Each structure stands twice: as C-alpha cells, then as structure tokens.
Length: 83
Length: 83
Image 1 (cartoon, rainbow over the protein chains, first blue to last red):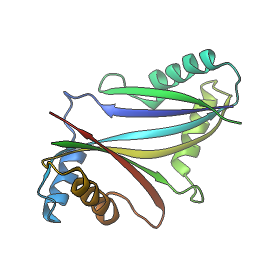
Image 2: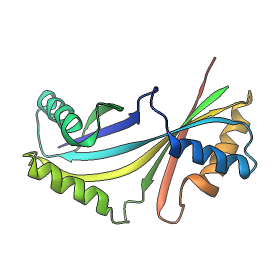
Image 3: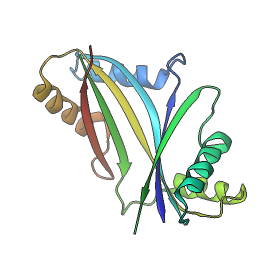
C-alpha cells in the first residue's frame, strides 16, 4: 500500500481570483502584512500496489488525465509506503 | 519576507464526498488500485515581516479565524524565509 500526496497549484502566470479574495479578507481582519495569497489543492490517494515505480507512473497519469488541468496548473506528488 | 505554506485537511472523522467522487472517477478511468481519496486545500501566503516567531503566531491566528474551519478541519503550516 502506498500513499500519494499530490499538490496542484495554478501556474504562476495564471491569475488566482480566489487568492486575491482571501488576501482582501485577511487585510480586512487586520493582517496587513499579507502581500500575496495563492490557493491550490492537495490530494491524498491510497493505492493498493506494491511497486513504487509503477505507482509513480500511474499517479502521474491520473494527474494528467483528471486531477490537474495541465494547461493552467502545475502538480507535484510524493509517495510514502504505508503498512 | 516569509512565505507560509499552509495545508488544510478535513479531519479524519469527517466524510469527504468530493474525495469519494474523485475516487469513483478514477475507477471509471481504470485506476482500480485507488482505495481512498481525501481532498484538501493548500495556501501560500507571502508575509512582509522579519520576525519568524511572530509570523508563525499570526499565521496560526489567520488559520483559526479565516483559512480553516477548526470544527471540521485540521491545518498545518511551515514558514520559509524568502529573499
């Protein structure tokens, strides 16, 4: 069993209106030191497999196909063996 | 300048219908090895401050007040010094 921890972020060149809204809210609450906010997704997947290399390839394919939008998002993942 | 990387996840006891939906989609695409999916948020904040201890306290307060819902979500963060 492997656990994949995937992070999906908007590419730096893509505007993040959600992040801008959160920054505005933080300013309203008095957190004036916040200069920028970018929001992304994190996904944990539990994979019933014993081959780490194969698991990596499959997770990469899942990101390309469903979990991220490669046109506007970057993704990264790491695998951890679980008992 | 510090960068805070915050991860917000649903508590393990809280159902994650979005994760369940993604798991179903992955199964439909042929990724039968996926046994579970949990989805969370990741936030990057750039803070105009020079005091790391103070920055940590402020980020913790932001999470409590706005960025996470402590009733159903756990959060963690780490700080990184930026040039």
